[in-house]
Image (cartoon, helix red, strand yellow):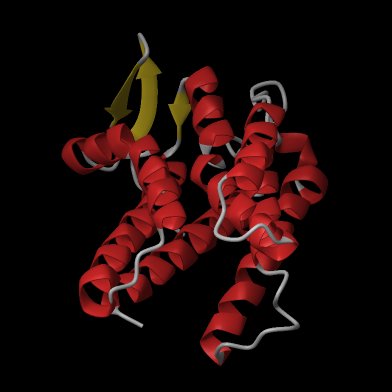
Length: 223
């Protein structure tokens, strides 16, 4: 494992922990898209079907269990425990517009036309767009609080670091996975405007005005 993949994994872990701490401490899921979390649950479930049939390492297994467990726990918090604070009116992205095309693409473009390979490819494609309901929800409400911005930044950083991982592996190992790379590039592009403003404007709350993203200064939420 190289440093880019390790840092990417740690950034992914940090994003999930930030989100869970935010929900648990505030006892609220306001501003969080349940639909994005359902898409992530679909991604992890489809990708880790080999959890009980293929062992790579303790690290790999622990990461798989963590991602699956935390995403379903997040869904439980959103739709059950803190359901009263969930903003279903603004979480209105039509996820079928993502799932159907992604499913079709997985059948058409994959490494091998085999059930598990198609399902794995589907998870790669779906992950690249799974954040769209969250970004759509922010654009509709007009604001994302500070801690949600941290969550999005950590999540986007995870994918950007994985791009560095693939570049490193190409030059160091001669390994190149076109499907994963293209999906990763698409996912990273979705975060580009957010990255720029997060870094240059400071740690404030995201505001959407006149279809532009700006930052409003606000104190950090302790987690």
